Length: 173
Length: 112
Image (cartoon, rainbow over all chains, first blue to last red; front, side, top):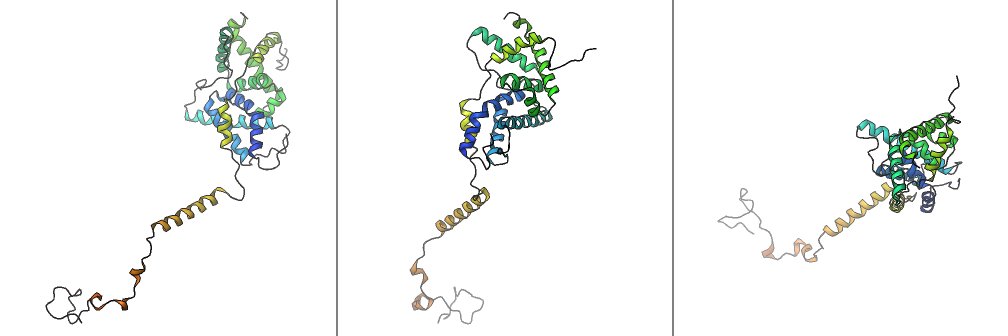
């Protein structure tokens, strides 16, 4: 945090990648649900970093700033896709959760993946940031550019919907 | 009428169970190929050698090399002075026949 006061070197970029790329990937996947698009998005962020267009030296939290860049980039892409009318919700390639070999756990994972795909992107984003990254509602609100109450509401609505979608399977567990 | 408090919902017990299940799930990570693909395209430019300058220099170098390779070698024998021609090597000189510029197909003495 706050270590870069110049254009980042290759070592700086590698450090940033190792520290934050997984979180950026999961955040992008929660919004876009399309791995190639998320790859392009993360690539764009790193190109901006390499060009020195982003000053990381004065930041309080590198991760929060990078996730905010992912958020804005993903929203831009979703708007462009909706204009082109070729964006279909849930039609992307790539999944939020890692593959599991155990058949029972894999069945639950697949149901969860399907249920997450049913959520609106903004609710899925909050769930991913809260439960995937362990961020607070205040941090999520800062990243998404909404109030803390909005972030918390989206989270609760998402959990309500997930609970309804997963109820048949959830009650077996 | 009680208002909805998103930070403290009433049905939090079910939510806690679901939260725990979701937290226990392994979220996916980018593949190892991502690291190479993304970082290889992010080589920071040398500030005093911007890309347009490199393109200009490369174009000049290519043009210079092209001219060098396209120019035939100089033949010293081909550069002899006109005064050194032998009599029989000199070009024809026309006399009195202005219509016959090359001096061909003439019957009279047209050479001196």
